[in-house]
Length: 360
Image (tube, rainbow, N blue to C red):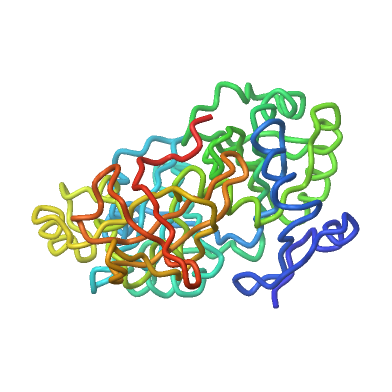
C-alpha cells in the first residue's frame, strides 16, 4: 500500500481511510452529502496525490504523444491542457488522461492512479522515436481546490490572477509561498476551481495556507466518495467503471477526443466504428421512482430482458433522485427512452436524459 504525503494530516482530521488504486486514501470526513454540498456551494479541497504524472520531452515528444493519444495534441499551445484517451489495439481504452503543454518540446501527462504502471509500460512500448520519458508520480502531490468560492478564497495566495485562468488552461508560478507550482483549471466536479501540482516536500505548506485562506469561506477537506458523486452529477466518465480495456471510446461518447486527421493506435478501426454507429452507447439516466442504481446492476427492457449494465450510479445529493450511466443498445439510447434498472427484485423505471444531471 502506497502512502500519500499528507497521510498524517488526513488522519488527524478524522478521515476514513480506505485502499484505493494501491494507495491509502481519504474517502470521507464528515459525510458524503455534507462534503458534496460544500463543493457545490462554497469550497472544498481534495487530496488526489495518488494520480500519476509523466513528463514526455525532446524533439520527438509530440510525435510519441500523437501516436498513443486519440486527441490532436498538435493543437495545444503552452499553458493549455487537453483531455484525451490512450486507445488499445482491440477497440478499448488503456486509460483516459490530461495532457499539459509546458514548453515547446515538453509535456505533462496526468494519468489515473490505478493505471500508472500500465500506462508507463504502454507508452514506453510505443516510444521508438527516442522521446525522453520521466515518471514523476512518486515525487509530486496534487490538490484539487473546487467550488464557486475557490478563486475568491485563494486569490491572495498567488501573484497570478486566478480568475483569468480559463477552463483547461494553466499557469506555472507562485502559490502559497511556493514557486514553480502548476495552477490548472481542469476540474472534475463542475463547480469551478483549480488544481495544484507541487512537489511532495511543499504540499503540507500549501495545504495549511489553503485552509487559512479559505477559513472565512467555509472551506472543508473533501474525500473521494464526494468526488465520485460530484463527477457523476456532471456525467463525467470514471476509468474502471464507465470506460476500460473492453469499452470503445466511440461507444462511451468520447468520439470528440478521437481526431481522425492523424494516425494513432487503432485509429482506422475506431474511425470505421464511428462512421457505422456502434451497437451500444453509454447513456445517462434518472430513476422515475425512488431507488439507488449501483455499478453492475442490470438494465432491462419493459419485458425484463437484460439489455445493458449500470457502470456508475448514486443517489444524487444535489437533485435527490437516483442517477446513473450505463451501456444500452442504440434503440434504447435516444433521449426520453424508457429503460428499467434491476434493483434487487424490482425493475425500477428510468428515463434516458442528456448530461450533465446537475445544471448549476
